[in-house]
Image 1 (cartoon, rainbow, N blue to C red):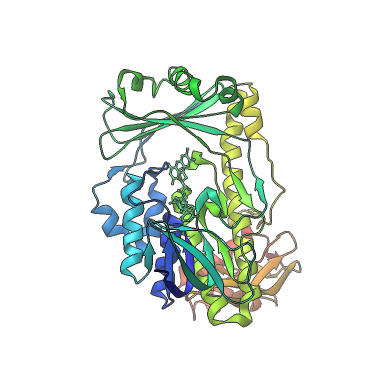
Image 2 (cartoon, helix red, strand yellow; image 1 turned 135 degrees about the vertical axis):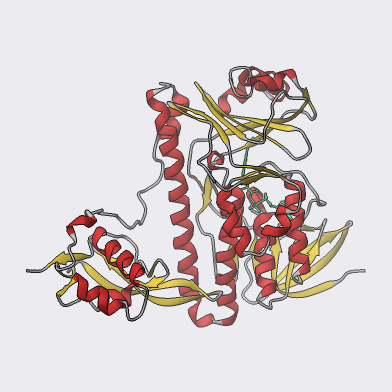
Length: 473
Ligand SMILES: Cc1cc2nc3c(=O)[nH]c(=O)nc-3n(C[C@H](O)[C@H](O)[C@H](O)COP(=O)(O)OP(=O)(O)OC[C@H]3O[C@@H](n4cnc5c(N)ncnc54)[C@H](O)[C@@H]3O)c2cc1C
């Protein structure tokens, strides 16, 4: 029998991005379903979660359940990267996780279900060819039977599959990853291992089930030369060149060697009036940072606020859409710059095409807030300063209370985008009060009626260092 479900939002894909946005939207009172085609728990590459994910998990109320799941904890990375050799974590550094992605993703999906999301798993979606004006009518296949979901908004969280289609731009050199899980490896400890080679780089980490994932990243030509049948031999020969991972070869392969695409790319259009792409359906980052899961979940939180705005405050739709586009492209460039910076380190070390390609900046310079970094010491308490002529106050979109709202922001002629909040302070209001020349000590005194003194100093210091203030005799 054919069934029909009416929801506000249909999310396609139950990975970290899909579960996170589904749960956030259900918590905001929307009727949400998630359609996931692979029976959970399903395996997935991407098991290392650095400590930088902790605040996000905490803010989502998921940290305790992840901590209780028995994943491995680590604060240490063994790094052999150009001239950098680092083994020790900074004292007191927080601990990340080495997870089993099958269980991690299932925990997130279960948390979404508990928040009220209808989860179809396994179920596959066939998207309608065109983007509808009103309601999406989505054919859904469960156990070989066709059903239907009607939704006002569609979220594409289908990962690299990108079920909504659209143009995608490659943002880095094409890279393949060959990986395999090993048992009986002679390594102790829970640390991640990252190492460069002349024409590849390596990543490895132990997993909660006692196996070890050893991955090699390389140019696709090498795979083309050997083909599917030669993959294991190629993988083994590359692994033999690694000082940190070669001992895996003394262990036992528990599965055949896999090969997947690890190239970064970005969807040209991540959002429309009744659809949005989140996680890797929108963009993927270089695996070097091990921040794919964190980024997918983080963008899903912002996307939930965008959808909440589209549904409840249609008058702010343009603001919300622009907010999402801008934030996406900022993140793409930030991650790209971090990766190319790390790859550029290699150029003095290995003069090979592999590293040259990856050190190249392949993206247009991006909107950024230039830091002029004037020395703070020049700002004396009795200095007379005022807002520089290059500064204007404009309106911009910000995420506030689960909506994208308009807020006053500062923009300087040497910046490409406005800034609304610094240390959570609405800086435009404070900047407005220094249009006329005043002594530093008087400005701080005036501001301290509204915010603590140390915050006043931090904001004024930031304005000075960013070139937003000028001396006045
Ligand atoms: C080699 C490699 C190593 C990596 N290492 C790390 C790492 O150490 N740490 C890290 O944080 N990240 C890592 N990443 C990145 C990380 O795996 C991804 O960023 C993350 O999985 C993205 O989450 P997502 O929810 O967007 O997509 P996914 O996790 O891919 O989830 C998408 C889901 O959509 C489902 N789906 C697809 N099509 C349909 C359909 N038509 N109908 C229904 N369901 C559908 C899929 O089955 C899947 O479950 C790595 C990536 C690679 C390639």
